Image (cartoon, rainbow, N blue to C red; front, side, top):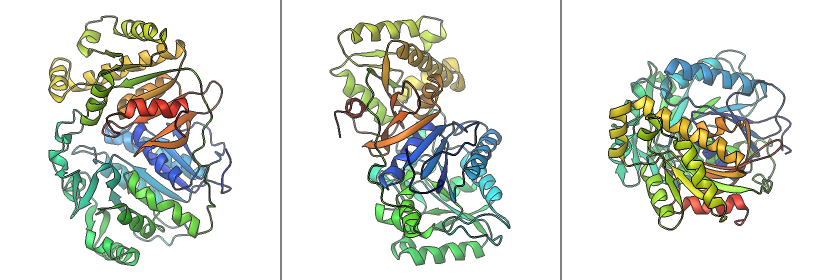
Length: 447
């Protein structure tokens, strides 16, 4: 892989694995050759890419740990020579009253502010101006829009979308200004939709006014992709941008306008990978439940029972035996722990929230290791936490990002010997036929 620039331009930190591939997908669509690392690399050896995305598993860990990991990622990205930085979180703003979006943003702003820091696009020395960034999880292509600071999922407010039932980060308030303000001592403001509609200069004027008012973070309204392009251009000189992957729509053009990025139509090209295929699903989201139901209507599937695993039953061996049986007939299989919200709550009552989640992740991770030994080389994985557990189990360290399968979900391939093809899907993303579609992409039957 070669780069259009001598050193990476954009350095990104994502708080989960599927969010990282979602962001990387957006950058590839914008013509940036993108490499995603799983965790912070141990080596500072230069990576040839236009954009680097460090995938952490920090969304639901204690805020102090999330801050520490994020700062380590920032240090590595700065050592790589990145000019601008992006903190990526979920398009439904998944977080708790204690964080982690606010604390991580504060820490990154602190680290990037002050005399002697490098400004983003121009590469000039900064004069120590007041630290400021936006927070914009909008992703209109996937139905996430923000108006007057309120996040909508489709036609309903965030707290009526099903996210209020999330087992780890229940979102019960759609007002993102309030949500973020509860997580930070910094003043939180709003860039309203009517300012965004007036264009880039109006947005920059809003930034200046908010800074003068002592605002350090501002929720930015966005109702359309055009709004995201406007916000992206307005943020060209910010050292740090935070949000969902949607805001990244407008970032490649900034580097292109600055003469730092050439046209790269082949940014998403991946190698062809043979071998068997499987789908692993751990998310309990509405979208993943629909995808599991669509698969089960005509294809083989094996359900993981967390309570059976907790009783010590040989769930991993049973799943692998099921897969082996169907591989003999050249059939890809789905192995899933996906359940309805009521089923999830019943398991959590018996096992505890943390233990239930850990049990599902560790079980699917063990199954993934066994599947690789059976010759599986193509994995479709549903759920951010599940994807994180699986890639760690498979000892994946670096991914090349390929073409989009569904909005927010690209095909990827590992680097090095014996490569794997992976599609890592956020729980809420993808159409009902996503699993079958993703396998066609990984098989190379979709161009």
